[in-house]
Length: 384
Ligand code: DC
Image (cartoon, rainbow, N blue to C red; front, side, top):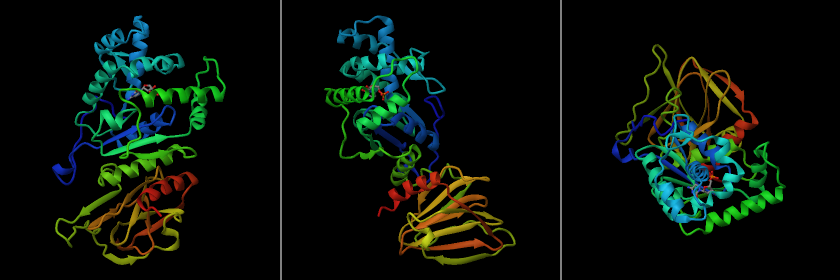
């Protein structure tokens, strides 16, 4: 995970128009799975993760420890405005440079008092300013209640992550601290509804599902499927987002002039063979069950007609997480030897392929987890 002190990297193909940082803003009610999912998206993309809820939690713990009168809104705002809140190198929240213990900031008794800070306009103004400073010029995934509306109104991707109160109550109970009395599911669901009401109805920084946000309901979805969907939505907004991560598996050659594209040099002594592919029955959305791995040469493909998705799952003996890219027109994708890959083509699609002679392919069946991840990407890129 990158943290706020990590160096900023902005090498981007395509020049200044694409050099704006990629910001993914995620809002949603308590317990919708935001923290887990957001952390994983940031980790997979290698960009900053900003957990704004942790900042509200840190301020609340600090207020309680300092003995500030919690029902005095002015005293609360004055105290919070004098605090500096940020994160250490491991992503742990700090109040005036002191790391706050996770058990303290996440304890149910802290959670019950957070509204004193969250509903206080003076506190919110200060925290939003600190959050925007942490984000300045960085690629980031930001989660909270006002990430899409107040902190990052210009985010390229806005998501509203949701789940039913019962599903959220089940998730909360699954991680309930062993040393705290365990409430009934219906009681946790009641508290969640109460917190939703507070989050949705406060005068400042209210949780809102705006028209611009993708509404993603996570009931019944596995975490990896949610992560895959979010990355797919992000790639739709920034097509070259994944290239850096796949640099050892994929070379992308884009045309500078219509009709001319520079493809990788063939392997020395090996000619290239060319061909066109139609989507076979096992290569269409929802039907892909296996990945291949090349030995002894490279493959290069480009889209001639229709829509297709290129799938990667890492190098090595076993495929890792599935990542998929929509194939862009006028672009050649060169697949490096040794990486697990597949192509998913919509019916009616034609791809042109070149591969070095002497190449041979190994095949591996996808696991159920891999297929779920793959289907999540394909659902976004090639909707039915
Ligand atoms: O995401 P979380 O559960 O850790 O957030 C803790 C509380 O902080 C939650 O009750 C709402 C509040 N919050 C907020 O008002 N604005 C944010 N950007 C993030 C959290």
